[in-house]
Amino acid sequence: MLKKAGEKPIKKYEKIERKPPKGYDSANDFFESVFMDKDMIWMGQNTNHLVGDVIADAMADCALEKEYCKYPPPEGFSKLKSLILEDLGFENMEVFLTAGATESLFLCMNALLNPEDNVITCDPGYLIIGTFADRFADEVKYIPIYNKECNYKMTPSLVRDYIDDNTKLIVLIDPLNPLGVCYTEDEIKEFAQIAIENDIYLLHDVTYKDFAHEHFLAANYAPDNTLTAYSFSKIFGMAGARIGGVISNKNIIDSIKNVVVNDLGVNIISQAGAIKGLQTKGEWINEVREISFHNQKLIKEAVDKIDGIFLPVYPSDANMMVIDVSQAGINPKDLSEYLIERKLFTREGEYTSKLFGDKYLRISFSIPTNEIEVFCKELPKAIEALRKN
Figure 1: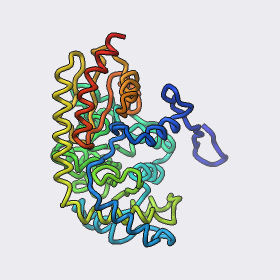
Figure 2 (figure 1 turned 180 degrees about the horizontal axis):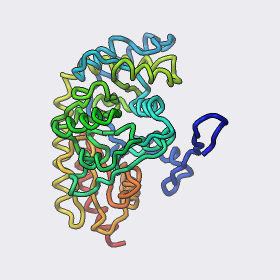
Figure 3 (figure 1 turned 30 degrees about the vertical axis):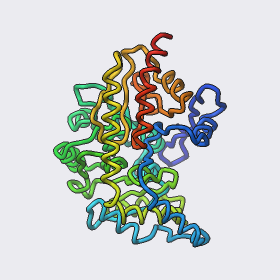
Figure 4 (figure 1 turned 90 degrees about the horizontal axis):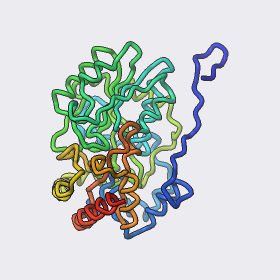
């Protein structure tokens, strides 16, 4: 801890470098190699490859008209913000646009947390949230949820066990990356009540909400305590366009604006695609959902035929799930490396869990069904080959 005279202690951090995959000098070299391989089946980053050309055409038109020569409004186009509120069914709320929901999460942590605070989140989960929180708060409390007793999710009861006088923020990723669990309306109501009773914030990350069979928004029950993180990366298939936002009441959004670095606005081409995506969502979302539901059913059938592996959560309410391979005596990292040699990009569990990462492989399935069929054909071969070794 470093401390300046008369100030609260601040923390000094160094970026923690992940060990690069075998054969690569850095993680970035690996991802670039995977990205450039046009034959690679993309199941490793929860991206959606099922939306048609309507969003792409809108972005292409924006580029051809050279709109990118001008700066966009610094807080985004009002039309886009209005469409986001309409999509969520919110009234009397404000939208702040960001370069993806991950930036929204960082800004929320920066704006709300103080050095004496603690944050509650879960493991498995989106680990970068804890990394962000740890920069500004005293402690990040990780609730272990990889077990049947809590149905693989962070229950209100567990949160009550972890909360204390210094808790400032509860992070609720819903549906949850990587497990695909989702919360019932009663659970969301109870989380909201916890936030109200303790006068704390609830950060509700709804990045994967449109893949869920049913989904409920915490801001409907605790509007003065909730920040909703919104993303265009997943259901809209715009991961590379980097656009998202945070939605809350005016006071909270004003506090977020105070810590913003990018005061020249969000990518104008991305905003054009986001506007068109929201305007046309009703035309294509059912097909995306139906294909995704069907694809995970095919994966379930394939997994059930292989001894020693299983799906902890099925059906998934996101566009990803995990395959537990621990009973087969297989390291998920070895499995990921085996599959990528066969043009199947997946992710080992350590990316999303410090406690349970050696147990599972994470895969996403919002891709064409013929590619899922390739995975289902290669999975048993991979398990058998690694089991022998």
